[in-house]
Image (cartoon, rainbow, N blue to C red; front, side):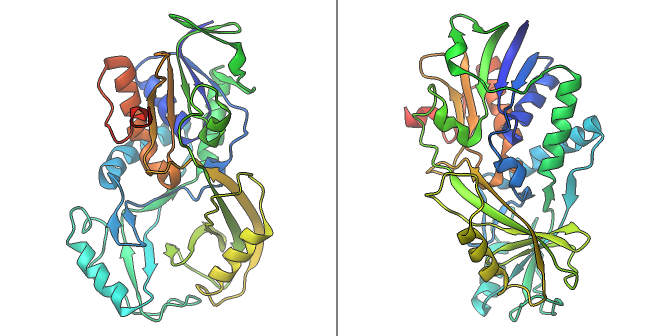
Length: 345
């Protein structure tokens, strides 16, 4: 079987690149072994503002403007609704937070998302003594629904190979051969699985473990993302996702009592109503020390490429960097220095 591309990994990065190939009439197959869970357990939120410092996320506005039409087309293609428009309300802890909010609005592209009025009214069940600020144009993708629907689509197209990708079986010459496959390029979108990849594991992908809780809080009735020391995101039927932890040492995808304790302690300072924990999830975010993606070709093998390191804002970043990698591989358009793996050569 001859294809233009082999994609290894089907998280947000893998889907974004597969869609770019489809748009341009390229043939491909995808290897997916379900070993990485970061896209599945992620909150899936998109928000171009860093609320901890009231600063714009790196290229956040442009990324969001490019990404959302792509996801809308993907919803139509898959006949699944996975984009949920949700405002985000930032709980202020002090008058200083309020002042910083007003200062931030004057920065480029910030007023597009930040409402100028500070809301001082109470929210039932939420501690907010200093009021809160509201972001518009934010929301979340139901990442699990997206990934599962895309897998079903690829199965019907006979493009999904649900097996481990064995690096030793890869023969590299002018073209790629892998068992009964002949391909022009292989693109690795493996998330933290990169650490086992002999071609790209020299790159400084740190990986940050994140844990979340799913709770049922029948007395909490919010239809927006609440952001404080944790986020509280509505899922429907008075269920909410709460997260997330950041652990730089534990590289397993197992839930921990420490993670649960941290989230519960923080949540109890955010909401004042009773709740029941329904589920605890964990995954390893593919993070890089300079907080930029890993995109480019292998330094010795031009037909091996990588698309990785999306970090905590994968929903926003994935379509843009997939486009950049495609243009680089197919049209020779240079990558931006900020994302090119040449910065670590």
